[in-house]
Amino acid sequence: MKKHIIALAALGLPLAAMAQTVKVDFEDASGYKSVGVYDTWEESPFRLGTLKGNCAVVDNFISPTNELGEVVNDSKKILGVQRSRFGSNTFGARIDLNTPFDITPDYKYVHVKIYKPVKGRVMLVALGKRPDRAGQSNDVEQAWAYSTSVSVANQWFDAVFPIKGCNGVQVHSLVVVPDASSPQELTSDFAAYIDDIEVNDSPDPRFTAEAFYGLNFEESATSGKPERYIASVKLNSPSAGNQTIEVGSVSPQLIYRDFTEKVFNAKAGETLTPSIDYKNGGWMNGYVYVDQNNNGKFEATFDENTHKVAEGADLMSYYYYETVEDKSGYKYDGTAVSGNDRNNLSTPAFTLPAGMTPGFYRMRYKVDWGNIDPAGRMTSTNSIQQNGGYIVDVRLNVHADQVNLSAGSRNGYITLSDGTELVNYKTAFGKSVKLKATPAPGFVIDSLVISHGYNLEGDQYNAYGNKQYDKLVVRAADFAADGTYTLDARYVDGDISIDGQFASATATAVKGAANERALTFSTAAGTLTFNAAKAAKVTVVDANGRILFSSKVKGTRTIALPKGVYVVNDTKVVVP
Image (cartoon, rainbow, N blue to C red; front, side):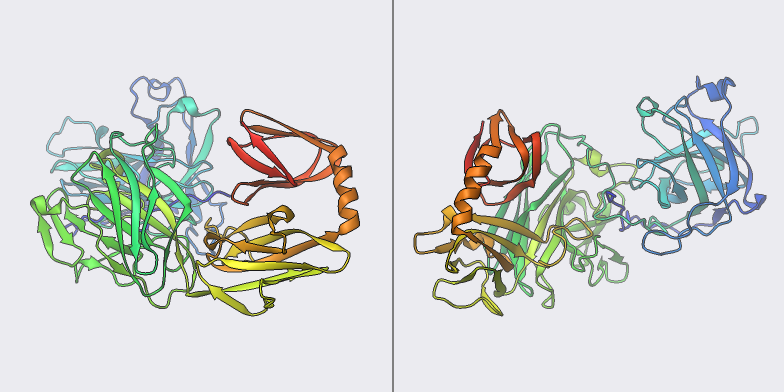
């Protein structure tokens, strides 16, 4: 199941204490007057009476726990609504309150538990009136707000809606829009479920769905200021020096860029200096996160006492955090800042904890305005989609000075070039290693499969989608005449496990001739086609030795490949 992202950090605007606390559940009718459907579109068939919506309180049939085993909703009753494709993108469930509440020019936050079968943004519409206007309807639309996070599918999710309005306005009804996308994209109706509505001063979700490395927008979302972009992200470490990952402009200009195939190197305890090359824009701030716990999320909370990010947070570097919208906030060192001093994109140096375990860690670079939420600012004004902000994810290789090197084989031996056995052996990180293959009598070297990285006995990608290791295939033709092969330094990026493959000298020649007759292949622009008269094992390796395809093929099969040079089994192939 693909994991989508939920913001964990506050939007960060402090408020005065609320005079009212509003809570609505559906265990009984004490918290609401009535329920129904509502559409802001005046020509909606649901407003004209052509169609009647389906909205009712039902028994809670959904599991009370999430995938982490946490209890997120053990209510006996919940509100169900049919999201109709005949309604507009603001069609939803209407909850009329027994007691209205006030909205003010300062933000209040409406929390709503929502469960639905599709992901996507949800919306809230507040209906109400001024009590000093006797003739005014209770149905005047007083506030609209999108949730501060993208919803996830088939899980309870705490949608948070920041709302504000004019003094003297009371909210009599809330309309929860379960899907704010265009109804033209819907091919059928679906049911959504709502529960436990609460209005308070906290922008933080009451709980989070199981979701990794959150974004407050769809991954396909594009920037409202496409002329701006991140050209590159950089990191300086004492051991690796200056490192750069090129990002660049794309069309359309995506807000989120996944560059986790790219890696920065550093050692635990080092002081690192990150930077962001941001083009064609100003009045923005930079933020850098490292998932230190490798738990699938970036945690960033603000300490109101020190006016700094809380100790141990995953936000490693930033300059400015806004606490009074459009006015002021605090620098990374806890000092107050306002005016032009807020306009600073720098990302100060930080120190990695000395006790970090060697491994790959997700690292995030973010350009945004005054907001520490790793998923992107989602206030009603100046959101990351509006302000020209961007997010880039990479990996950070936190490594030791030496890494483990082991080898296993049958019908021969894999050693260092000087004959040193690779048992409990350690070699220097980032330094090339000269290996030697010594076949047993009657055998020849066929290939080496070299796994390099971390957690080599586990899955190549961990539970949070972070790659743990790569595999390199070395063919017999890559060895020197004396049976040696030099493993390039770039592959000595973590622990190394070598699987040596030796084959019978006689059988190799016969098998090769048979396979040549049984398997043929051809190329066209961007494709490689196999034709196998009988089932044949096919392995495709790129110029860097990475396995791109490995499977049995029978009959005809075509795969897509970028233009370049590849090795199919032991034959070089050029894809135009």
